Image (cartoon, rainbow, N blue to C red; front, top):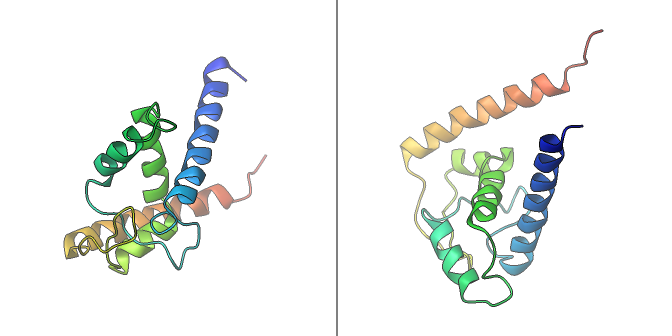
Length: 128
């Protein structure tokens, strides 16, 4: 394994761990339960950065890690399904923060179909 591949794996692991920490800190916002996932408020990364900056333990969190964690969360099949179902958007505290537009819903449907296609490709048995 090359050094860069190893670094990518470490970064991905750190992102997953950080997302788990966010779920502990903001349980009304981040969840692993597909039935409870709701679309995040538009611009939530800015509010998240503000809140982390206000906490000495979290203020050194790099911006790339926040972006990667949000990307990982919002690219999941369960999250995309929440967009397609037009569930209400939420803030960090779980309060409602708007609705999913028809355009966002249509885009979510496209992304969900692409996600399903990629997943099916990965699950195909490899031929020798």
